[in-house]
Amino acid sequence: MITFHAEEQRLHAAHSEFNRGRLDVPYERPERADIILSAMQHAALGAVQIAGEFTLEHAARVHDAGYLAFLQSAWQRWADAGRHGDALPTAWAVRCLRSDRIPQSIDGLLSWYSFDTATAITPGTWTAVRRSMDVALAGAQQLAGGARSAFSLCRPPGHHAATDCYGGYCFLNNAAIAAQFLLDKGLRRVAILDVDYHHGNGTQEIFYRRDDVLYASIHADPATDYPYFLGYADERGEGLGEGCNLNLPLPRGTGWAAWSAALTTALAAINDFGAEALVVSLGVDTFEHDPISGFCLASTDFPGIGAAIAGLQLPTLWVMEGGYAVEALGANVAATLAGFQSAV
Ligand code: OKP
Ligand code: ZN
Image 1: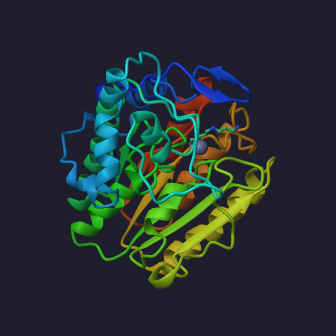
Image 2 (image 1 turned 90 degrees about the horizontal axis):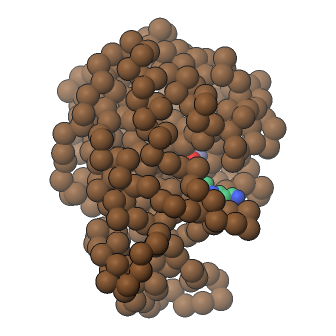
């Protein structure tokens, strides 16, 4: 399987995220991509290539035009306001406020288009985000050309990014853009399997009313874990999309036995759906020593995830999402992909 990446992905480098009552260096940092890249270069799973460039029209297939215009201009507008530090939002249009008026100032707009305090915009954010999308699309293009699999080493990640909202370190929804690309190339049904510790609220929202994409996710219960406001089991899709959304929330402390049982359930749903290709939102923050997560998967469990997914016998695009235990990140990603590769 070819691994795709892009040097410019490291240009998104925030100073801080507000978390647990303090400003911390973000867990989602440029070295994550360097670590995974180095692991892939040593893993001998296939060639490592720089992604080519794709137009923003691919993003516009799943994201709002005003949102895309905002993301492109946000840093410049922040700088024009005399700001030098990370651009972070400060207020949100929640239940008791109006959400029918889009603000005009950069501060108002940051709040309008975001949903958390973990996702700063920096001078290089847009370039990195665009290239992360390119990385996803380069992998999707491989599948469209007949490849059995590809690994898109995306950074920043994407699964929290919704039609017109960013958050959870995500700006463009790389997996959703890739899935839509495959549909636009003529596939009729694509499944997205999200194995990141956190629920992919953005991916769910983007496809919630559609029957051409099944979204299946195994994640921490939103009653206790980020993103808190989406990801419950009773969210099954709406309208045409009814039955095309499968959430499998699990409690903190979940280990391989219960996690892999949920994987079996998700794989059966994907099989029943009749998907012609699979996009995997690959987060390895399910690892027992992840600094921001609460599941208990061991490094030795990750090959089993890859092998089980290989059993679907579908063209499979792996799209990188989370994973913050930097000392084990490269090994856990490579182990997952090696498990897949040796089972195909
Ligand atoms: C991104 B991905 C909880 C704060 C959570 C954001 C986590 C984003 C995870 N106290 N901060 O899904 O790995
Ligand atoms: Zn995550």
